[in-house]
Image (cartoon, rainbow, N blue to C red; front, side):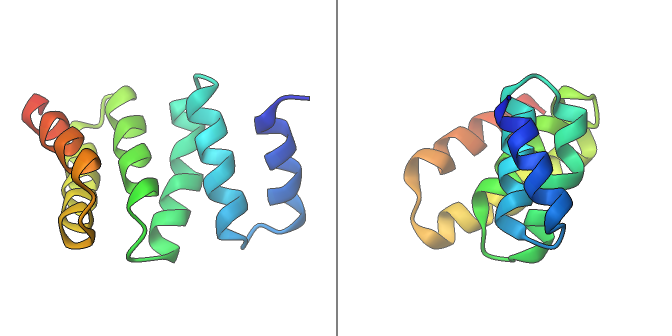
Length: 101
């Protein structure tokens, strides 16, 4: 059973669980399904305003499906959190990603 299938089962049992939704989104992204990951990463980002990682992955998924405008918003939100939280490596990555847009 794939990692995505494991987390699909967890999400089916507890759809409001933010960690399950983030983990499913991450597994879908890693497994090559960025479109499928968007809903779950958006849920995770919306559920916790100071959580940077779902926003970074959400932006990457949105970029992969061609929604540059929404990707830019997700990356900008993640960048603000990276700066505020002192995460230097994600901050550098986000500057690079935003420069590509």
